[in-house]
Every structure is written in structure tokens, then in C-alpha cells.
Length: 224
Length: 361
Image (tube, rainbow over all chains, first blue to last red):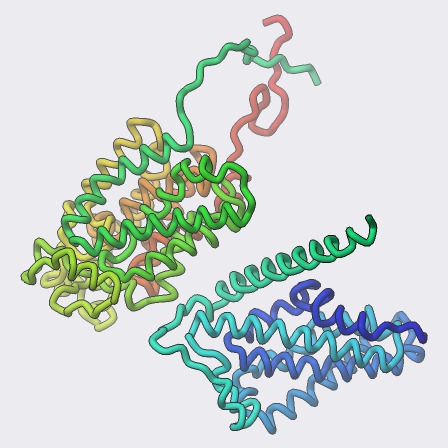
């Protein structure tokens, strides 16, 4: 296939088919780990790594595996990758691992990853699948970080707390503390995640509508 | 199957209008709340008044904002049905009287935007907006939401004048310890946690009284005045007796039994009935048209559920007061209750079979 539009794939992954904001997939880890921007970033990057590798491997073996057994094969592949990420994070990012712990292992059942294998990697070449994995993963990471930041800001009055533990001491400048704000505990708790996600989804729809209006407005003079 | 003849005759127009409307109902409920509110102002001074005013104001402001954002036509007409004012009023009555200004604003946002307009506005919401806001505030800000001021007429300290009241309200200055006091339910809970028998704990603890001379939320302590408001609503047929009575019974019956078994561990039925938001919840919250079941049987089940859950949360739960939680839980049950308590269809029996009516009877 030579007519692959990489721009399209990237745009889909980051915005139009965003795992969270458009497909509404992977909501379980989304709700559970986004108590802070740092947690969201860690989870997002881990998922992205798994997603890219899974997409590449699935794309490589797509002609060997028959349709009947593909799902167990994909799951085994994904589980292997997740185990590698799990052990690697335990070794090198131990502090973050203690926070994300269980949810790293649960990336296996993250429907977004099997979903991309099923709907994209099986049908496309290795390079396209890798690009798709990166775009989708970054879109997912973006959603996790955004929701994490919103909840962290309103819930605890901080931004990127403990970011230096994930990214190294040079990123300590990211950590912001809002002075004199105690935080609304509810935003850290699950109901806050649902409420914040709802408002973010509404925000995306508003932006989409505005974009569509602008497109229609710019298309009009050409038609007339 | 014989064709059933309907017994009801179609009546031709003109019809008379009963004169009832949403705004009239809302106005009557507000009128019923008035005595307890005014009494609350007298008990807790200017800060309580500021809190009340700002809570209502922010509810109305967020209502306008939501309606504008949703592009609702006739914003003014929707606004003047009075439901936002009533939500704000009810919310204010359940707040600690000296809560700072931002509690009122955040509460208004949660009640109107998240509790009501997100679902589509009046009549669409699943949960009672005032109780959603109350619970969200309590969970989010445990400290300012559990700071109870002793009623001023009982306090030895001077009543704050207008300006210093404004300062209390706006800057959330720490309230002097001498002015705060535990609620009866909170006191009972902490003393039990310390392993002290209730009989000895309540001896020196806060009094319970019908006229609300005790620490508590701004509008819910005066049981008598709320009862009067509730009776007014019953007389004007804004509400029926089913839900309120069921709520009170749902608390009183288990409380009486448990108190009889172990008075050292469980509060008496009287203490339960006169404490916290129970009276307010029974007459003004459990009777909310939108979030309670439609049939009288359903309302009785709903009320009993609220009462029982309230008693369970108060006696065994982590929070000393549970009316708001109980109301929300039973709100969630309302569709199920409505499903199982359907009224009989006209011309059919309870199972939905057509009634056997002789053709020429």
C-alpha cells in the first residue's frame, strides 16, 4: 500500500479518533490513575510503549496468523510486552511504579491496545502501524495528562507534583503549587474523574463545532 | 378477549385551570422555608445571612449561565420558575452557618451545573441538586463543612456586627474555639469512638431541643419551625404525607428498638428525629417531585429507605450525619421503585389484563 496518508493517521490518533475523547476507550485506567498529571504521564507513556510495540509485532505477523486464532495470539503478544514494561518500570521508575502498580499490569486488558491491533495493525504495514501506535499512544497520553492536570489542579492545588521522580531532577521546574489553596478532595476521588471527563468531552465538542463552522465559512466563498 | 368499556367519560371543553404552576409551587415551598430561615438569621447572625444570599445568588447565576450556554429560548421564563432559587435556599439551609463565601459559590456550581442542568434542567435530574452539592462539599472540604458555630444567643461572646460578619464571611477567618460547638450527632460519634458510654457522654454534651438552640446547620436546627413549614405544605397540598411520614418512621422505629436494647450505644428516637437535617430532609427534600417516586406506595418505600439508611449511616457509618447520603442513594433507587410500583391502568387489573366489564351494564 503506497497511498497511506501518514498525516491522516497522526491527525486521527491525536484528535479525531482520540482513544479517550472520540472512541471513549480505556476509561478504566483513565479514571483510576489520573489523580495527578505525573501519574497520567507515566501511565500514558507506558501504554504508548506497549501500543507501538504491539502494533509493530501484530503488523509483522498478520499474514502468518489465521483469523480464527488471532485474538489469543495478540493477547499473548500484548501480555509479554506489558510484562516487560512492568518489570522495567519496577526496576528504573520504582517510585512511580508504586503509585501506578496494578494499573501497569492491567494495560494488557486495555481495550485501546487490542482495538488498534484489530482495527489497524492487522490491515496495514509495519511503518504505518508504528506511526499509528505512536499517534494513538500520544493522543491517549495527552488525554491522561490533561485529565490528570485538571483533577490535580482542582483537587490538590498542584500541577505535575513529583514530576522529578518520573523525569529526573531537571524537570523539577514543572512542579507548581498553588499557594493558599487546600484543594477539593472530591476531584481526586472517582466522581471528580467522571465530572472532569464530562467537561473535557464537552470542551472537545465545542472546539470541533467551532472548527466545522470555520471550515464551512471558508468553503462558502469558494462555492459561491 | 372482550373489548373493555372505559368507565371514564371524555369531558368536552371548556376546562377550568386549577391555577397551579411550577412557580407557584416553588413560591409556596419558599414561603414554608421562611420561618426556619429567619430564625436561623437570628440564631447565627449576619454571616448566616450572607451565606444564604450568596448561595441563592450563585445558584441563579449558574442557572443563567447554563441556560445561555445551552441556547435555551426564553431564559427569563425558565429562570423565573423559581427552582434555582429554591435549590440554593435548600442548600444554604444545610450548610454550616458560618461557612466562607467560596463554599456558597462552589456549592451553587455543583448544585445547578452538575446536579441539574447537565441532565437537561428542571424535571430531568436524577438526584436532588441541593443534596448533590451538600455531599460534594462535605466530601471535598471536610474542615469548613464541619465547623459548627454555637447559636449566638447562647454564646457568651459578643455577636459580630455587620462589618466583622462580612470579614468572617469573606476571609474565612478562623472562628474562635469558644464559639464553636459539636453537633449532637458528631458529639455522640466522637465520644463513642473514645469508648465513652452515651449515657455519660450526653450528660455534659450538647442539648437537644425542639427550638433549635444547638449547634448545627443554619436552617435545619429548629425542628418546630420546619415542622410548621411542612404542615403548611401539607395543607396547601403541595406535598402529601406519605414520604415525610415514612422518612420519620424509617428513622424512629429502628432507633427506638436499638435504643431500647442498648441505650449506651444507640441514641434515642427523639434525639435522632430532632438532630441534623432529618426534619428538613423529610418535608422538603424527600418530597421533591422530580427525584422521588410517582406513586404513593413508591413514596412510602422511598421514605422508609431514606429513614433507615439515615439511621444506619448515623449509627454505624463514618460520617455523623447521613440524610444527604441516604437521599442520594434512594434517588438512585427511584426508577427501580417506579418500575415496581406502577399504578393500575384504567380499565385493567393490576396484572394489566382488561377488566371484565359487561357490555350493557
